[in-house]
Image (cartoon, rainbow, N blue to C red; front, top):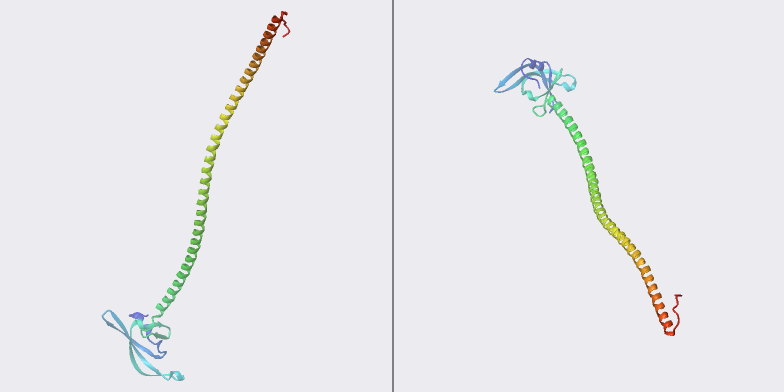
Length: 217
C-alpha cells in the first residue's frame, strides 16, 4: 500500500492492472488525493488502453478511478496492481506468509515439545513402576527385618535356656559326685555292719559251742 503525499507521485506513469479481473485498466497520467473525514482516497487519471491483446495497443479516452489505499496490492516500477478490496496488499500477503512460516515453526516446536512430553510421561511412568517395585522391596525387607528380630529374640531365649541347662547339668554332675561319695560311704558302712554282724553271729555260735572266738573275720 502506498501512502498519500509526495509518495503518491510514485503511482504516475504506470499501468494499472486489476488482479481480480486480470484486465489492464489504463495508464496513470495524473493523481490527486481526496480526503473524507479520517479517510483518504487516490483519484487516478488514466488513459484507456485498447487492442492491447492484438499487439496494437493504443491510448484512447481518459477516465478517472477512485481507489482506497487498501485497494493497492503492490506498486512495481511499471505496474500498479489493484485488488479491488478483495485482495490484501502485498505486504500483508508477505506478512501472512511470514505468519504462516512462524506458525509452522511454532507447530513444529509444539510437536517436538509434545514428543518430548510423551517421552517424559513414559519415563515418568517407568520411574513410577521402579518406585513401586522399590517400595515393595522395602516392605519385604521390613518383613524380613521383623522376622530376623523375632528369630533373634527366640535365639536369645534359647541361649538363656541353654545356659540354664548347662548350669543344671553342672548341678546334676555335682549331685552325682555327692551321690557317688554317699554310695561309697554307704557301701563301706554296710560292709562294716555286715562284717560286725557276721562276726557277732559267729562269736555267739562259738560261745554256744564253748569254742574260742575267732578273729579271722
